[in-house]
Each structure stands twice: as C-alpha cells, then as structure tokens.
Image (cartoon, rainbow, N blue to C red; front, side, top):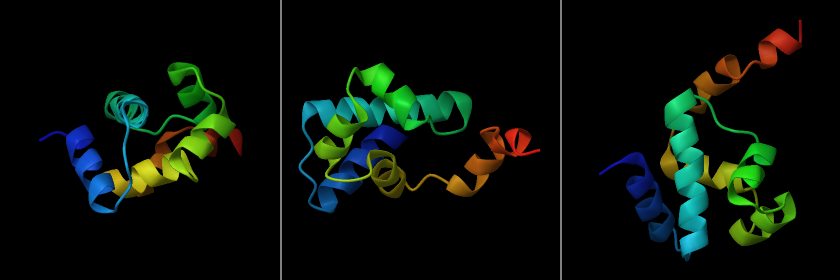
Length: 90
C-alpha cells in the first residue's frame, strides 16, 4: 500500500467522505511531495488541479494541505528546512 492509499484510508477512517476530486488532489499533492521532498504551496496545488484556493478550502471543509499532511502522517519537520524559506529570510 502506497502513501496515497494510506492517506485515503486514514481520511475515510476519520469520517471524511472522499469523492474522486478529493482523491485527485491528494494524489497530486503527495506525488509532488514524493518527487521533490517538500509540500507544494497552495497556489501550486490550485494550478495543478485547476481550482481556486476558495474552492479547495470549501472542498476539504478547511485547510486542504493541513488535512492531507495529517492524514498522510508525513514528516513536516523536514519540510520547512527544505522548501527554501531559510534562503529568503537571510
């Protein structure tokens, strides 16, 4: 079972009713994470799935990336270091 399948199962265990569009967003976010080793920004996710940020928030009834991280249980401690924020801040 891969990370996408585990995330889908975890979301369903928590009572979140996933539709095909939810699964597509989860798959896109986690494939990006596996390829680049950091999470995409919400704007990047929006351009990939062709939805506005408001549509994604409404679709997930709250923070879409936060929920995907919670369900997938990926290690976010490593993400802030790897996503380039440190370089921008000096």
